Length: 213
Image (cartoon, rainbow, N blue to C red):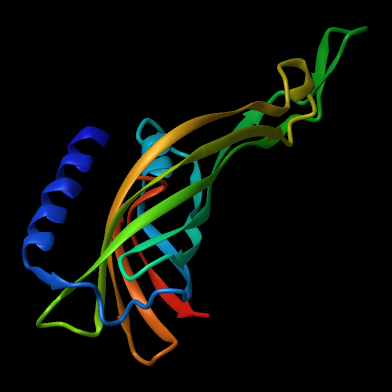
């Protein structure tokens, strides 16, 4: 899926690039930009929930913040951070507390097992900005990001016997990732606007607000 998405971004970039004639009128060299957005659909929660039957799910949609500095009239560089989480809770009837001396259980009831996953992305990114002549209020761009994704997971249970088969942190780890993106900013005023972006990361599509500093 990642390879197909990168191919799509490349094709769209070529189409937009051919239709442009000059650097964006809504993008100015020397200025700083902040993007705050939310993404959908989440690659993470979609993959985790694919094989789950029963129980309840709780998802925090991917949120992200991007800072970029316009180093000249066409290129910007900066960094980004993103976060998403997913929780799955499963209820079941348990035997209660096990007595090692009698070999019997007591106090059985309904218990809950809760699994949590969280993902953080930290990356450097750069973008090339260009204008569509017929839409001067739009700042269209294409670029790439390189960084780390940090994943962690945990397990908790209301069952008093959960220590018999584990509890607490399950696993954590990090890995490098490379992502491409294409998007556009639309400015309602000189300092405030909205953006939409297509790319690979925590989510396929990101939308939100942006600010010129």
